[in-house]
Image (cartoon, rainbow, N blue to C red; front, side, top):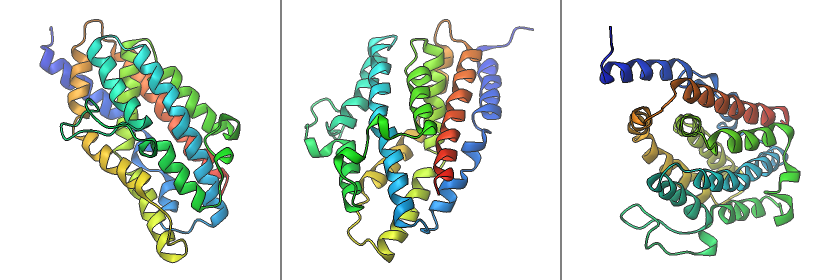
Length: 248
């Protein structure tokens, strides 16, 4: 029996739910659950900030590679939206960087650097590859390999997995912990970097199913490569958080 395109898509959605949706790091994150309680010491908070800053800064490399390897103009522009916003171009009311204003201080890493400075971390102590632990660097390299892949199905699977993970609530758990620390002992701690990304991921979450259907409809789409990349990407995400847990 030949399946209709609609039933084939539904079967694929179930496969995605059983692999990417059921991945352990999507279902639960022991590190961020611990962090949400606000029990991190100043030393633990600085260690977390350094590793997150390395991931955040090196993500720009992966996003640029995603643009370079974009299979068409629409994908290229979608990748540039993310890249240019990361670098400091604001979104307009239409939800695009087209016509947006560039400001140095609107760059995401500069927000994070401001946060780090309140913790006593200087510019040379954050965001550099040399500062990353093996687990952090493995995550960053996986982003380059899978998320920035030249193979369209592979890149789509990694991108879907990253969005699915980001929408699973880890930002909210980090914010809960940071708000508790701010209230208890570091009143001047700026939270804009964290709250902005959480709000952005809430918007992205509404579109992930549409993106899955669009990827599935592309000529030459490979379900196997999509799922393999998504699983590998989430394995690397889990490794990042496990690495942070070991530094506690």
